[in-house]
Image 1: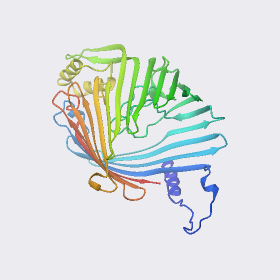
Image 2: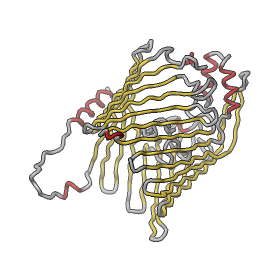
Image 3: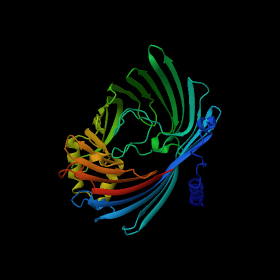
Image 4: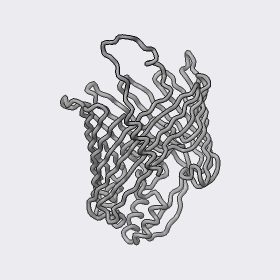
Length: 421
């Protein structure tokens, strides 16, 4: 029944059209430039994927299929707001249906969720308050964000994907100075209970955080603190600085304590707890030919070393699938970035060789220690109004017993069509 209401709502949105107007009428209507009471936008998207399992991987027995298989994803995203005096209601919702016809059980799953749903109240130009499900955006990084201490993990292969927020309350104070730029102070409270924000951590408590920001000239600085609660206490710093109109540097550092589940080659498990700094350094550069370069180096202080990964691979060679799956679910061995040092490079070119409305790009994430990589070429076409098409490939490259060489998939190809409204 819920899905039916979502479908009716989507059809109603798609039927709304702009009022007709005469191109020869030169009348000026100020109401056209006033803020609207409500706004609604979104997209419909279809994605077809082919995944090729890596049959040489130590984890091949854990794969959904031993041969190439397809997945199809239909997605509706709705984003809207409603204004009333100094208060605004924001909402972002998604409906996703995933169909995997080539698997033995012919899986089809549908999920509908609010990613954001919160009230924003701004009584004056210095103060604003928010309450509800909110996805914060702390930090300056592109592929990685170590100082995002109150957010869900970012997908380094597709950093622009919308992420589901947590239920929280925050207050922000902003002040501008003639000679010293502007400063802001943000305070956040994020509660965790059995029924609220349970994914944030096991400990049921109130989690507090502060962010102090200073914008001065071409430099932005952030100082961040998160209390000891459902996650360990953390202190962070972030910066960005524009060296030129088309060239900027950015960086982040986060000091925190992190625990890791370890296993030796004989299957003996232990826990390691260490305090250290996760550090990110990056740059963005736009050439005169509209080629965009984004490069980042990322270090995690308390992540797996090469020796610890070697022990894990030695255990995986002899462990039963059940024991191996149990270890993987409790540890970070197969997390997206499980080891300590990574390089991310993203380059994109608008309208190469005078191809109107085309953009080509190439992404690379490399494990600096074992030199395995994920290579992601893509091509985007946006020549039809409100339509966009994208083709991309994620190809895992690496030797045996390397992070990306042992991934369960050898590659994933996808074609995506999106309609904006």
